[in-house]
Image (cartoon, rainbow, N blue to C red; front, side):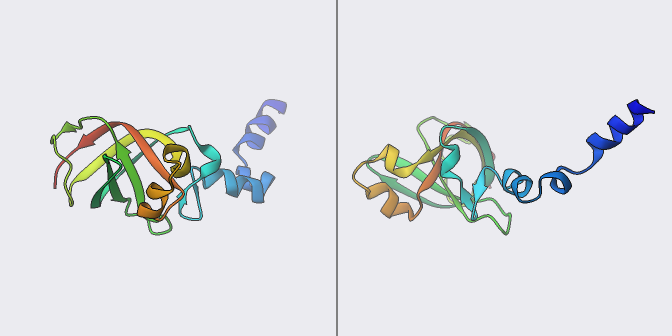
Length: 132
């Protein structure tokens, strides 16, 4: 009987037990629709359609539409050549894997943060470009 009660206990949704804190944890790695700066350096993967491509300080930056309504479009920078289609263009479907970064940590001039109008972005170490 104790075994079954233990199993039942672990099946209870965590939100019922932790309330507000469980909701916050389930929202990670996002906060207010953007990457959460609290998790700088944490690995994550994002996939979506490239909406815009800009160059800041000789670095390529891509605005990615994740197609998830509560989440805003996310900026990604990538220093590596993507797998699949070699050149990332607007309209391409791309999966990026990398680390959550804070713009001010990557550029102390604030030029990057002003250009992307965001405090955070993904620094990709892997990209798979599936094209359009």
